[in-house]
Image (cartoon, rainbow, N blue to C red; front, side):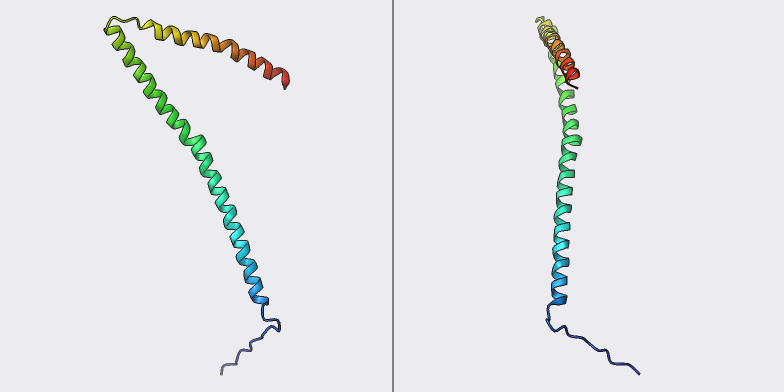
Length: 109
């Protein structure tokens, strides 16, 4: 023998519906938070993972190109020392600036 199930009807009729809407609203908010998190994660992955790798590849090609240009200039009898001297001058100009800003940062801390 089976017993009949009783169903109860809420007098206002919307109690269950309002609860489900609140649940959907919470799910929507959690979905937005998840989307923001994933977007920020993708941005940080791009900024700190992919870009340094691309920069390293760029530098490798640049160094390779400089070596080939140096060999070509030496083979043609052109003065290849000019590029070397320009790089050396830039380094020597940048070194005092580095130490100046480093000492300034140390004083403010």
